[in-house]
Image 1 (cartoon, helix red, strand yellow):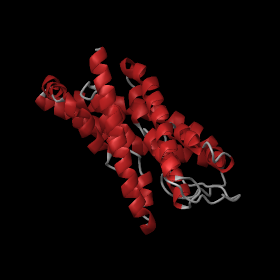
Image 2 (cartoon, rainbow, N blue to C red):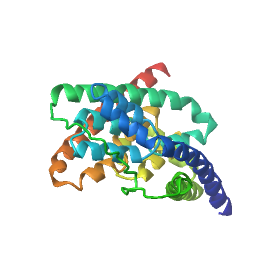
Image 3 (cartoon, rainbow, N blue to C red):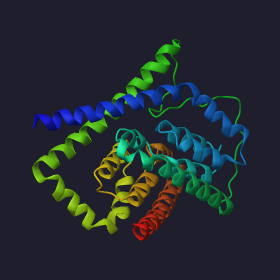
Image 4 (tube, helix red, strand yellow):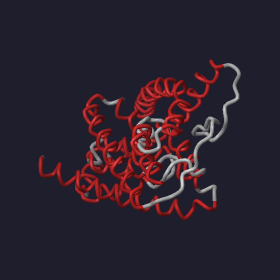
Length: 283
């Protein structure tokens, strides 16, 4: 029993360390990234897909805020949402056996995010308002930073976000730890593998949960070989962090949110099953 707790704690600390480094670096380039959208509107889906790959849930909120203000297109925000992976990369980095999947995951999400963004913009025309000089400074906590001390801004906020991630990961790790302890890892994995065809669908449904814990859950299942790579792609592409929840705050956006969720889910499901089919043929 104690071993379960210690294993969960150690695995979570690994994720915490990696997440803190990435959050710390992102704190210095956050405003520069938002400025890119002001200067390059024609390639904004491409920029959106690139920014979405950054493992930081604040990206989806910044994008959602810009979309709500009609500063970026629906195609661009969908490219951001599709490319997002939240804490999944931190989990994959913690297991050297799965490092080989990181580049393919990022490549698939980037390419298909761009395809989605440009396709939606091709058929869905909307007025884009020119962004003025003011800088966007929303982060994933949906508040503005006013710290006079830059050291606090670049250390305290990354630390707080990473503690939140640590909490999610630790709870998930404990859950799986005790699940394996009482049921048995072989029994669990045997059940998941025997229902592999349902993997993308199940993962897509989990991805609809507007919480970072969803990406943690799917990543942990993938590390246990309970989810296929195709299923992982589906779930992580549907899961857009808290960006969609942020848009629900605005009544005029709720219809669009429903449309975007449907597009994300069906598009991600199609890609996930295609990848599953290709990998089954290869393997």
